[in-house]
Image 1: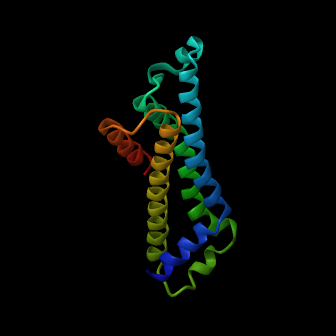
Image 2: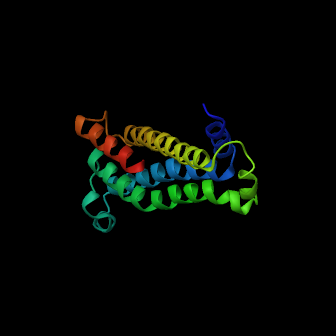
Length: 159
């Protein structure tokens, strides 16, 4: 692993922004999707009408809800982490020190992007695992082949 890549990985792993964003994306989306599944299974017609076409108590409904939440919340969560990875050098006043390093600026930027890509893939995989747990706890049974395809789409959406 290159020094720039390992340095950026340590920065993200030990940062409060990385920890909170990962927890919010994985835990928040899983909890909200589970709450929507619970609302559908409660049988209240006004709640079901508000949830729209994803208001089914099956894997398709759970993953539809998760995709909607990921589309809105993921934009915010992933965007904050990406902005923090690059912006922290300016807010911490360390950007001028980057010019004194024996590592080129292109390598530093590539390391930042690579760390963000690895983090986003790991977060998306963790979210898919959390959604499987939500579905099993919610009584949906084992995921079908269509559910696994939906989980793969959800993972791709999160990346």
